[in-house]
Length: 168
Image (tube, rainbow, N blue to C red; front, side, top):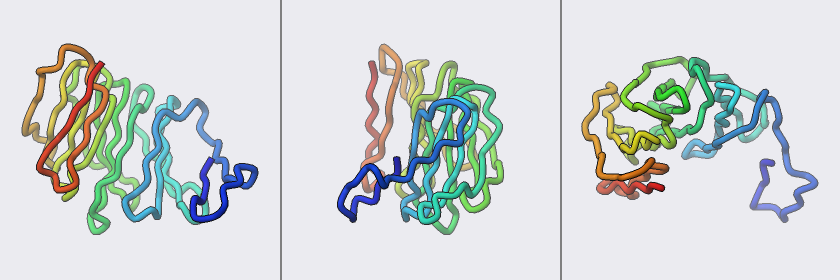
């Protein structure tokens, strides 16, 4: 459910959006809160208006379950990144949903994608035991393979100076 936390919480009035064919694995809001995206086992990501609760566009192209979705911070040049069981990362234009690029660097499921605060980099975490950092041209800038198991999450510090990862 989508709940307005500024109002008294009454889950009977929560907006429930149920249009995916299979379960939703991840949800993310745009930094300005105007949109949110749902990543699903039906191989799609749907982007919604937070105000109207209506679908704005659908992101296609994954060949298997979509496991993760993230928005970049920059509204001027907003990007949406997705990753999933097909081992790929896909980048879309956040204004219109147009596909921009695909990155095939991981050898297993992409568990997490996260943009740097300035929107210049994308960090990823994978079941292949690596975390990777890419620039917005899709060039791998760094590969961290010191984990001994699947890397489940990745996060930037608020100033973008540090990247933290977690694993099994």
